[in-house]
Length: 427
Image (cartoon, rainbow, N blue to C red; front, side):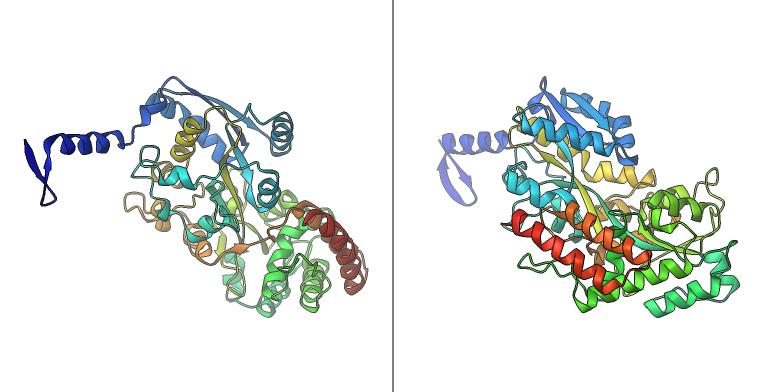
């Protein structure tokens, strides 16, 4: 007996075989029912949201999730111990791609997710990898094209400003460094209001100095892994940053991490600062912030948005890789990200921000700025193994310059130290 298939006469047995093959390739959430997946993530608003929904995944799949949520340093220590012991106790882990990607790739600690995405039996047809913002897709790729993680958070630096103070003084949102300085000067009235601040503490300060570095087209390291901290543009960025902090920031800024800067702004004593957009929710919480409803959110001068990113990765030594992949795609799905946005938590999928039912771009005051920043964001740090060392070395140069050292000499000293490190780590 024969039947027509795409205009070609084929035996019925062949047609049945093709139908069986198509059925076999259908995706099912229940395909790993009864298995257990071990997941390690860093404590954050995202992980809080995940904890509240993980039961849904277990019900959907018939799987069990051993979820560990730890502070960042403890999580990193646990992961390092696990990998040193063979890497078999954690299936899915939270990775800070801006710090760890190059180092983990070199160590072989990422499972390449590209074959999983191409597997129609493992990947939900509604997953739509193309839905992630370009900056999110770029940060999870290795130089040779591997996809090492699925992005769950892309943080972008923005300019936070007191829109009420700007309106009182008829000041426009700055689009150049000169305008930013002019606004800081006009609003600076200590101790009531300080014009501008950012991180001064060693290591932490290199994240926020990435803004003037990008503005002045400076780099930390070139494409040949040569340190460039003493270039003319890098010195210009260092000089601008430290002069701005010395002139307009509150006393003691040299010891400020993000929490101290945020605290000053929440108390109403700071006019502007640049940092990651993740603090917006706290600033709009009237129970913790005196400036709720008075905050403006803008793209940084020069249309810049230094980015950092976190993703969920699979250990190449995981016991249950396919079960791990099912969890990973559920926790980074369009439906999950839509819930994040509805909870006022950032998400790296375009559809999460475009959904008509929640209209986040209209209802969340910082959403449009985040959406726009994701389109233009560039990594805050170079893709090298020694990101932590870079932050330590250049962070000291910032501290020294804040203390009165010559920026050129501080930059040259930091550059020599970093190059010595790179000669070992980037081989």
